[in-house]
Image 1 (spheres, rainbow, N blue to C red):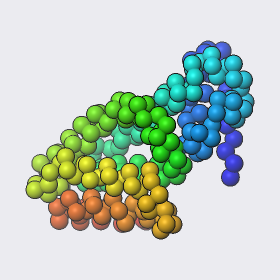
Image 2 (cartoon, one colour; image 1 turned 30 degrees about the vertical axis):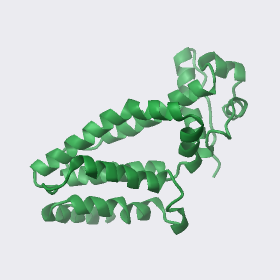
Image 3 (cartoon, rainbow, N blue to C red; image 1 turned 60 degrees about the vertical axis):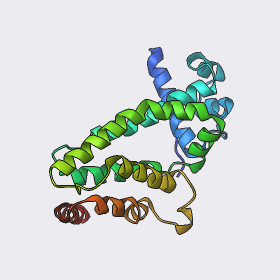
Image 4 (cartoon, helix red, strand yellow; image 1 turned 180 degrees about the vertical axis):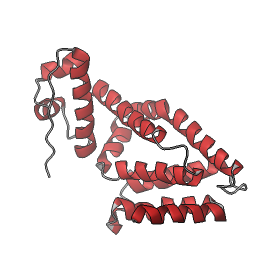
Length: 215
């Protein structure tokens, strides 16, 4: 199904810029970076290139803000999760939602970002990674303290392993050959890893939660 992009004309410049930024991000995610020249972006957004350059100096400036927006949206989704749920469930949902979001992103987006804009890729990742890692480390530690996660795990090693598995799943072609949907891909990879760091009681809690979600 074709996605129709519409710019809502506003009397204030920041709103126009926000519209351009949000919809440019969706175009980058769907088609990749190299396929979206400034001229192509302007055409798909139904604006002139002059309007585009009015708010963004060049494509790299637009891309930088778009990638930062993407990471910020991911972080906000993480913070929107209920803190009343057991820590094992919170951890499970954080990664599930991340996979649901990124699994359908054009793989070339991240590959092209890293290859053609390496400094930008590092800069934008750094902007959000410290906050994200602190949040996840805190969640795991609280889970250990409350008997949700095994006390013998190394938090930093666990998170590094999660990042590698996640990147392989949603940002590379490694699992594409299996033709899995996002849910099955998650259940056969990251979800299994999460179960491995849970205590027996937490696994029972997680299984009960997943059963309730299917009903």
